[in-house]
Image (cartoon, rainbow, N blue to C red; front, side):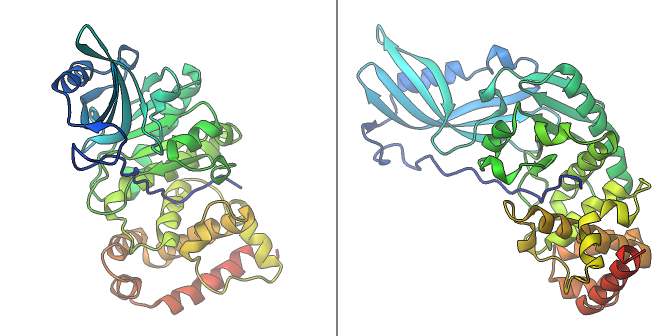
Length: 372
């Protein structure tokens, strides 16, 4: 069973105060012009150890300062873009330490604000590998490992282009932390949520292209995959990046996850029995699903076999739609389901309803996964 995931929506905690005075921090005070100038001078360029990363617009917006004699702690929001990749600035809530010497403030360091996920470079000096379509940033990884991931991502992008006609950048950023725990820290979740998975995608669904979609690799899960498994996982993730602008809260997860697997498996020789082992075992036990997977079926941290069945069933549903009505109709359904309720989207694209689709899907599961 291949490690899989659902799209992850991350919203950084609101750690900054709207007002510069009286924002609830002990010792908070109006911004000292010297502090503001020190932060501005310090953030005029990224740190030297990030020189290999194509950064632009690097700046810190100071929101509040807490002073204690010749020491100060500033709460700030870091803004930056990865050149050629980010449609809008990425953001990170930070704390900046300053000291005053002979009346002049200077920055002595910064770190993630309490409760805010770290940036990859907070975990160590990053190594940068550029592919034709991919930018891979890694910490605690060999250049050979990162080059292999870049090569797989470079293969994934054209495969997604061939399957998804909608507009997207045609590029992907891949983050490769050193450990599963480091990956979980980047995503602000417990490590158990991602154990056994190969990768996940960050980004906010809807309202146009996400400013900073990232594919985040679980180095431990990814290392356990075969070459074919790695290709499938990265193609799945790149599909989420490409379709982000068409994905909204209206889109059922069985459709978004099933479509991503449809793209990932489309050019492989994998049969349903080979690619859906968990669901196959259930069907042969007489446990035919009563309905297409619910959104709740994709929750992290639950029964891994049940999660596998949800993904496998979603893939087979999208595979069925493509086989019966065509890949172009599957794409139209995906786009329509992000704009309007699923019953309307189904009626407009396949000319049927959810009950009819479910019956056809159940028949396909019985025929393709039943007893030999």
